[in-house]
Image 1 (cartoon, rainbow, N blue to C red):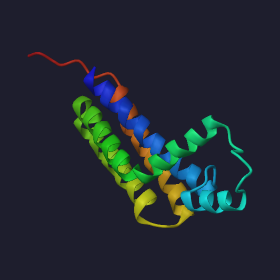
Image 2: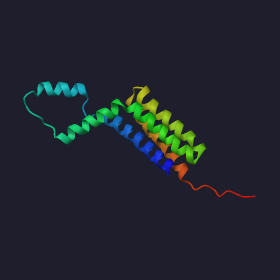
Image 3: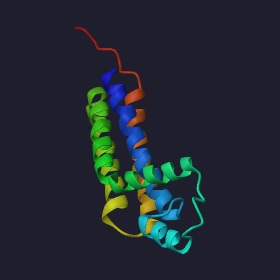
Image 4: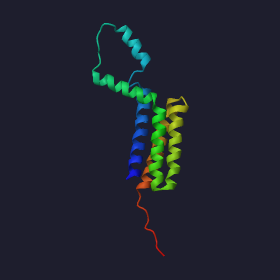
Length: 141
């Protein structure tokens, strides 16, 4: 049960970081600088955004800001969940984690970020899928 919870939390956290990075890259939410610039030109116009949309932007901004920490914690949880079930499945999980981290936070090319998200997520899902296979029965001699 613990390994399933760790694995699910790890997959969810890394998917959340990937979504936030893609959302930021394609401009689904404004950063603090563009929001401040837009608000100074619209002074006195009142709030043009619904409260729910403003909260979503704040949440996405927080995820992008704390993304490296969230991703590392998620990857550690995923590795723990995978490692408790099948130790050899740690290899694709670790490789996927490194690819995701480097692709999202070390290099600056958007193209390579998208490729790294696809490859890293694929490796993490492979590691997760490898743990779902039933174990062969143990032979008792």
